[in-house]
Length: 396
Image 1: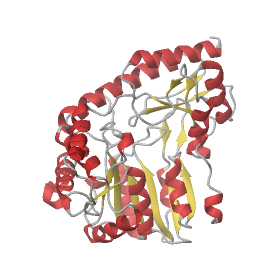
Image 2: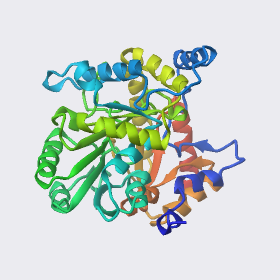
Image 3: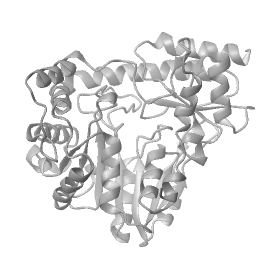
Image 4: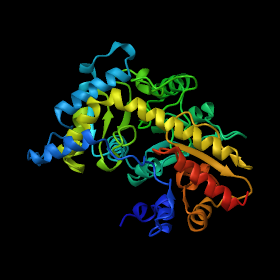
């Protein structure tokens, strides 16, 4: 076995979840998914595909009709520079999940020994994937203020990116903090990386889960994106997923937006990884996109309500450090006086309070001492029940 594989850490979130196995009383907020099932219309489309016998291989890059639907969706949500759906089609690659898409992007760009910069706290795969390929990974950390707002030191990030930096990986809206890049920061990063010749892989899977103050969730509302600023042939790959805002976590389907000159090569990589995504899953995704403009905004509104419910209840507890996340599906918070061993704390909360949260150190050293709480719940009362359990455990 390669030493880098042997050295990979097991998921600390899974470690906490395993501590709750066999405990039906545990309120589970540890994973990054809603407790809502995939809409019936999506499930019905997949079932119809299977019943029609669509059990064969598909195009490496995805069903043409799904790629066309994704292109139309991208043209609607990212109308900058007056691009039409046809301009997006040749840049779309359907992948077997956002995870697979990010790994494919890393495989396409990174050689052993290359330098990669990752902004953290970050979902651990973003750091592990280039390391598995033999890259040298450096991290630039966000930092919280006294109220729990996470901020980027833009000058520090730009200073870390040099002509020796092959790749920058950045997730915005961010898992776990909810931190979201603004257009000014994206423009500065893009300009700097053009100058250094550095590729950007932008994980934007949470872009629709965005909660700007004073704004509703229109049918195309999303967080600022590098795609709104970049030219098609910029050194930029953007990862998307059907998991979060389409309630399809278990379906394992995503897509990449690529420079047109890279799409064919990416298709070859898909062949050597998975050959293609299952057709019936793609049919479900096509049905999801056909109803995206009707279904996604109400979902975002429910998530916003969950965020506000959870945050209000948490911050009413003494010693809680947390702030409203502008994006994503998590409140990242800290309990004062509880030290930095968040893994032990998370396990203790499972055992003693029946409360399942993710430890912040699962997302890198910058998250040590913090806890992540997924607020993507159908019922705000369930979130309140979780806070009640935390209050009782703290004996407040």
